[in-house]
Length: 382
Image 1 (cartoon, rainbow, N blue to C red):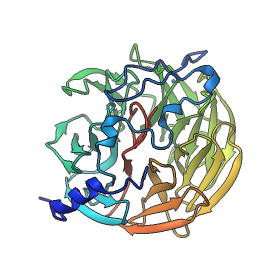
Image 2: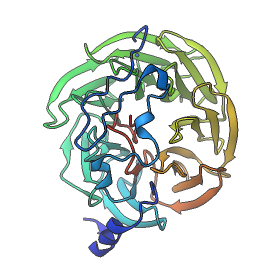
Image 3: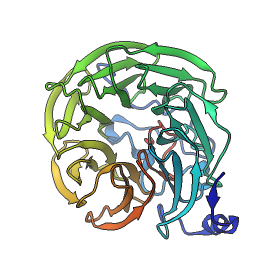
Image 4: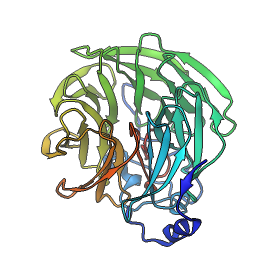
């Protein structure tokens, strides 16, 4: 059962103006530019470009993304439903009770589907972004989070509770392989080297990072943080646009750890604020937005150097996960502990809107997103 406005509203949205638009390799190679989904430009990122996200700039939508309704999807860990928001009006236009503990809304590699991941129900629920509606559930083992290899051959269920990575065929959803990660308690977030061969997965309850060979499906090594926070330690992780470093948010540390390009060691730390959690990039990949969930703020840093630029307060808020609009003008974030969604201007950090939602909003996805393909999570695109 679900409640939604009449289908006519979705038709109106279809014609609305797109307001949103509207780990290791010693020497990481440039992104190999895998064969992109139909209708996308096969932009090759060269070392000189110094931006592995060059194909995910403002308005650079693939044909699949252009076909999507401009909507924001909010999964809830507590109320077990997905709420859908019209970004043009900030109005909630649909609610879908799916049950379970819904963690993230994950765009598929080819950007034709969005998946609501439910780790307690061992399922994912596909949403058609052309209609904004869910389809039949798909059995997947403990999908706390989900990613796609950069060649699109595998979907990776990050099975946090089981301490393992489960590789699936993203079309048939048959298991390809299972990789145990026993030394990575709380495995949850990831990002990949520029060539896609190596993944760095955070261990929230281990105070460390698991460096994974994504080709051979094996653990290469563990990287311990200088301070091993094991209650709410390493969270989100993001590769810098120039491919030189990985930034790791650590909630207990109140900032970022910086890992070298070869993914062998932590080289420094950057303070941001209490409860550092999510990391997102501006559309031109010059700025990095770090959500400080406990402090109630967003730190704005230089995306390559980590130098502080600004801090945007969200008084009484708990900014968690989300993404930037397709045109780069807005930053959408779930308010994990406040039953809210926040919309901020990326020009000056002004809080444009606080939208009441359900209980436990988590891995919010703004759709569509620019890029040739999706690596998963809440919309990591390249």
